[in-house]
Image 1: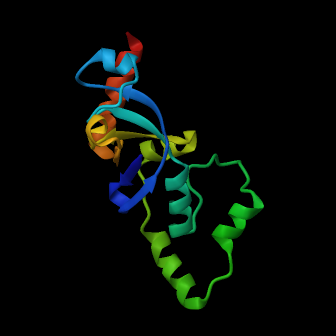
Image 2: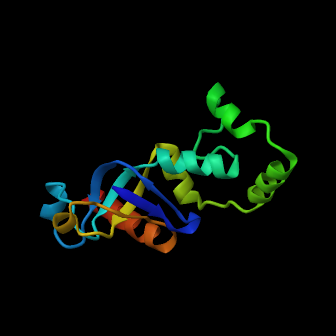
Length: 146
């Protein structure tokens, strides 16, 4: 489906990997049914690629890991002075929360479905951030503890 990243004003088409939580019914979670307001895990690759292209900084990578030559080239490629100045200004701004950064390192982020998949045949939504992300992290951890 199509998922948007609210704080970065970026929307990308990405794969839904798994249904993680459903407030209305455990049965919907067990059968992996996609409904509105279900919390799902989506592939973070399109968002990471956009972030790295937009801010020219690596994201969601382990500290020791080396970038491939293609990725290194995309981040450090030759730019005109005006363009380089624009990227340097952007580098001051980006601050992704620690919990979201950890999810990007795993390669999957939590998202909420905001469309009604059964009615329209699409599962669109938004990436969870901030307080909402913390809330659902607690809920998912509590469910796993049972």
